[in-house]
Length: 297
Image (tube, rainbow, N blue to C red; front, top):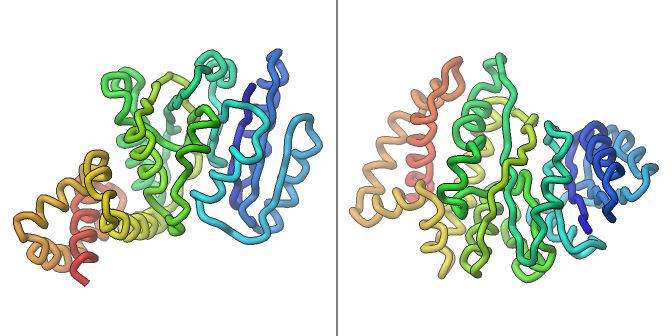
């Protein structure tokens, strides 16, 4: 009936998998939990290997680290059941009905997004990632249902296995960033729609402000390469407000001016983003300026 798919990298997933396993065991339905480790450090592998002793859990270690897209494409090839539940390894279950809620949503061609939540954070070194998550990712179900096709994340979703097999994640995206947006854009383009359900997981994987900014820059470099591909630009522009604004700047031939202004203000932006009270507005300006500046290389 369901295959729960968890890609792992340098994370102890014992608590997450144990809770999912307990919920599955309590239901009278066929299931399996697939764990694929993306060449984690030995200390994490040693801990997570123990989970393979539980019934219906299949654990595999990859010899080398592969991309986020490639590892997600492995699951439908190995899954025994027709419906896949993708869960990121830095998730925490917050409902005793998490699995049963998804089971009730099964239908041919389904792509169902459950949402995410964040716990409070009092450590300033994680404040930027937390702020972004709370205001840009933890979208209430009422808002998600207004424009259901707009909201999607690979953090927590259920999908008909055939959809992923027909429209796999783009394995040309090897660096961090936007592989989920490209997948989302493609399945919408192919006529699928996102079903929104109130079935969130808690996102626990906060990273430091410095690391978040570093990953943001990596993702923006990925985005620049993606939007240059023939036929991809218009699709991404319909999904990403950032790219829509960048293309408007290009149209009015203001890219050089915005790039110069970004270089002038970059240090001030970074001081705010790495400080005690980061601003998402400043983050948006930083992303737009960085993308314009990178495209002028």
